Image (tube, rainbow, N blue to C red; front, side, top):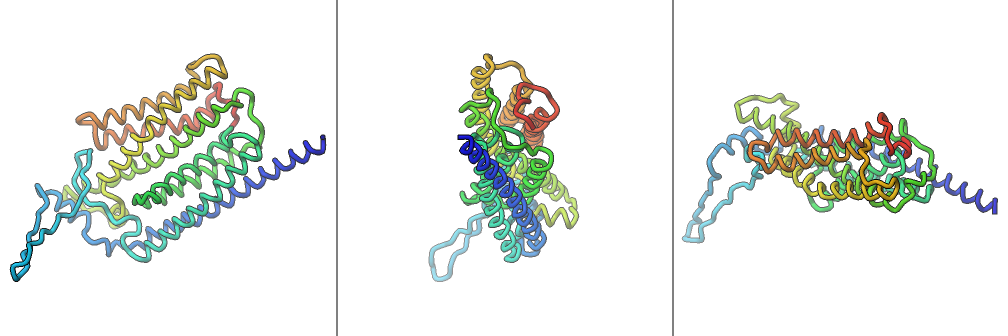
Length: 364
């Protein structure tokens, strides 16, 4: 009997070591993907982009796009040339067609971009295997502490990004900031947040761990993608504003900004992402309250984690309300979205590390 228990314990430790090895291996592949994305941006020449953003902005000043009528000789049927389809921003900005993407429209840049996506997919599979191995090692949900939460969070964020690509959404411009963030997240996890595999305290040993924490991780990962799009929207909007007023951006700014989607497209993407995930974040808070009632005998106790989860909810509710309110669209609403995501980050890191609360027993 003792031998069987010893063998079981050894097997768990073996799985834990395998999980660690897989996480480190995924970091190595993510690093290669990071450099491939850099090569995509560097070798994506702007010379083959076509019309520059300055020309597009000048075109957008027209009251309506022109429609050209060509009549073929010989009395054949007339042909109407359709105007270029553009994205109209809900923020009231210019109607400017999207840029060609990070690759800048070149074959070489696109090749590096495809390599980057392939490496990202491989790293995602390796990291997901590491998270699953950790789950089998501890015989529970693999998000009982900050180390496990961080590794799962980055896995879900990359999975969401790849999901957009599989849905044929042109979001490869997210690749470089995503790889940067994932490497920082995993670096913090294995350096400062590393926690030995162990069982949960009784309060956490509940099926609600699978429901409440998994939805929190998924919401945070998608909120992150929306925050990146919002930040890039602010940069791109400033760039388009400068061009519209006759300014001349630097060569580096032009090279980067013209490979991004238009400010209108970035604004629409961030809004749709945040609006779609907000109901699930609402459910996350409700599920946490129900779990608190089972574990502590009260649904709400103004614990730090509860308070900052609610503050985050208020932040995103204010953002969605601002989008529907005249005068608070565009940049003002974007600032609210970034503040809301900053609240989520503080709830993620700050509360667990710097604040003593009822959630502190989960360990760092």
